[in-house]
Length: 377
Image (tube, rainbow, N blue to C red; front, side, top):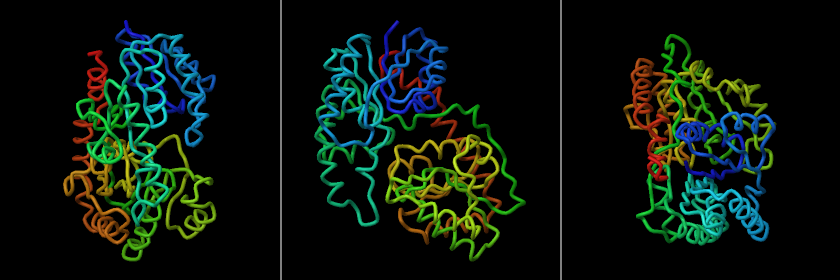
């Protein structure tokens, strides 16, 4: 039996996205300690029922105060010393940096870092990277250089992220593992043959932020609806009022009033909405490997996404959908219109999506690879 500490941020990601891996570890007889910053009593009880110990720690997810981050790192070190784990798995950027360093200071034998995406700092806007992001890339690269030096393995979801990170970070390529997506339980997202004898419905699932391509998509759907007025766009995702690049409530209300989009908001039954749609669209500017696209593929939807890191891992162009240039609403509208004009291609392309999901994103296959990387196979 090994003691394994999983260090993340939000408890919801521990329970939702790390759940299958935790179950796999527990079933193999390992003791799991799950670190998060915002556990509810219900989440603690759920993990306890699985034999997992929920551990609280303090972390500012987006703060830039190095003193606070270092204080958190030493507190985390103390907690790890008390547990004395054999392996740590840190994921998300701050836990990867400070969790790996804390584990090394606590003399943990094996420290695995998983970078699920390079995030805001490495996501360009239409004009490239501004001065602030360039500075943050250098600072983040310096921190990654230190933490990766002490990591046993560094996992990336797509092959583009380590290449881009090497521009500002020094690390051994021999430590790099490409996972290809965190995967999902395919039984939870069974194939559903779409009905093609009704108005074509596109669906977008993401936060309503510029970097997710929401403004590009809104421009594109308006172009499509000029030619094909009955075309529908379902938007699932929440507003981020603290983000200046986010869609505003006023703008959203106007889109709903004009019937440009169907907006049920953030919902708990995403699978049902996917099953009631025809094509999934994600014109994001950068991703790790988007979970939302994986879910749509499993259900059997063709995918239209951008030819950028992460997104391109979900599309074989012309087979299960199309890749379009980032920031290009006209090209996006052309591919959306193509599906409206060729509805007979929705089912076969959706079947290709399901096949690719089974090959690449089955969580059991992904977890087998994770265990191998962690030295537990």
